[in-house]
Amino acid sequence: MAAIRLGQMGQAQKAFQKSLAEDEDDLVYSLAEDLYAIGFVEESKKAYLHLLAKYPDEGDLKTALAELAIEENDLDLAQDYLAQIPEDSPAYLQALLVKADLYQSEGLSESAEHALEKASQLAPDEPVVTFALAEFYFTTGQYHQAIRGYRQLLLAGQRRIAKVDMAARIGTAYAAIGNVDNAIAYLEQIKPIDLTIDTKFQLAFLYVEKKADEDALPLFEDILAADPQYTSVYPLLGQLYERINDFDQAEKTYRVGLSYDQTNPVLYRQAGLLAFKMGQYDQAKDDFNQALALDDQDLATYSALADLYLARHDYDAVIETIGAAQELDLVDPRFSWDLARAYHAKEEEDKAEEQWQAAQVDYPANPDFWHDLADWYHEVGRRKEELTALEKAVDLDPDNFELADRLADLALD
Image 1 (cartoon, rainbow, N blue to C red):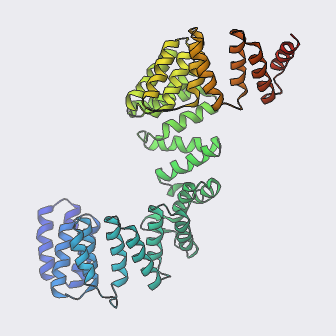
Image 2: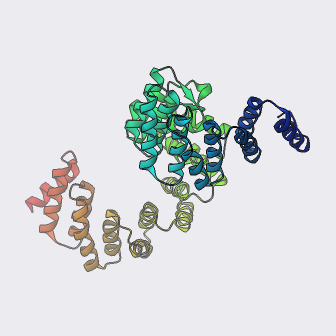
Image 3: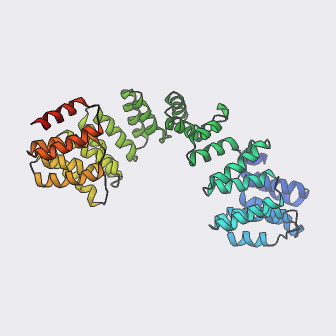
C-alpha cells in the first residue's frame, strides 16, 4: 500500500505477490479490502481468490467476489457466487444486500426490494440494512418510504453512513414530493462545513421557491466561488437578481454563465428576456435564436420571440415564428392572441377574427385580453360586440375606472 501511494507500481506488484505467499490470511483479507477501496479491482480479486482456494466454504469471500463481479459487469458470475451462500451462513445477510445490488444492475427492482426486505426481517435493527432499503426507495422514487428509513437511522444516532448524510437525504426526499418547508428544515440541520456543493444548490433552490432571496443569494455565490462551472446556478441566480431589480447583475450573471456553457438554451432564453426587458432588442433576438438553434422544441422561446417581433411591429416575423412552432405541434394559448394582433395590423381582418375567436377559449377570465378584443371590435366598427367585450373586461377588473367610464359612455350612445 505504501508503494502504491508513492506511485512505485513495480515495487507494489512485487510486495503484493509476496503478501499472498507469506502473509497471514487475515492480513491478505485486509489487503484485498484496501485494494478494492482504492480501485485496484483485479488485484483485490486475486487476493480473494487466493483465500477462497484455502477456504472454499467461506461466505464472506464469495460475497466479496460477487461485488467485484458486479463491478466488472459480470453479472452471471456474481449470481453464481451468491447462489453458493446458504441461508444459515453468517454471510447470508451481506449476500442479500449484494444480491439486491445485482438485481438493480439487471433492472429487476421488485427482486431487489424483496431481497432488501428479507434482509430487514433478518436484521431489523441493523443500520446498514435499514440504510440500504432507504437508499433503494430513494433511488426508485418511493420517497415516503425512504424518509421513514432515514428518520429511523437519525433517531438511532446514525447521522452518516457511507459518506451519506441522513438529513440531506431526508431534505432532498421532501423536496422531491413538494414539501418545501420540511425539506428546508432538514437541510438547514447540516453544518455549513458539511454542506456539499450539491446540497447547497438544493437548499438555495428551495429558498428561491419560498422567495427567501436573502438566504438563497449567498449560497449561490458560495457555489460559484467554489466552482464557477456549476452552470445550473446561473439561470436561478440571474432570475433572483431580476426579482430584486438588480438588472445589471442579472445580465452579468447570464453572460458569465454562457461563457462557461454555450449549450444551455434556458440561459440564452433568460438572457434574451432580460435584454428584451431592457430594450436591447437586437441582443434579445440573437439570444432567442441561439436558444432555438440548441432546442427547436422550446415553446417558451418561440413565445418570447413572437412577443419581441410584436413589440417591434414586425408582424410578418410574428406570423412566421408562430407558424414554425405550430409545424412542430407546439401549442401556446398566447399564439392565437398574438396572431390576432399581427393579422389586424396587416389589415387581414378575416384571419384576425378567426384568431380572436380561438383566443377567447383560452382567455375566458383575462381582462387584458377582453380589453384588446374590445379595441379590435371598436376599430372594425362592431359596436355591439365591443360593448359585450367591455362588459366582460369590467366584470373581470372592476377597479379599472378607465374601462368602466368607456363602457358607460358606449352604453349611452
